[in-house]
Image (tube, rainbow, N blue to C red):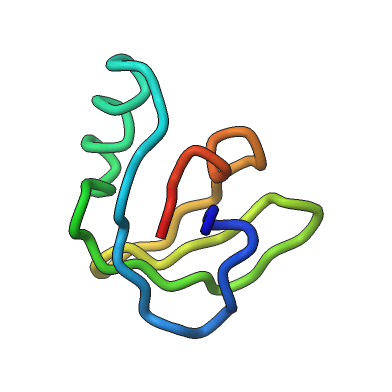
Length: 69
């Protein structure tokens, strides 16, 4: 399921990233790779705030929809 649809508060594993190479490298620099554990902290209108490792990231809807958990 895409990240914006995922339930908040649960620890989820990234299964697939549906992006071109440029965006995949960007996600990698943010710490989001296949197998990474993430948690959705909040969601509003498809925009999400996620916890990745020890940090928090805000992703807009178009980027968040490319991350499948």
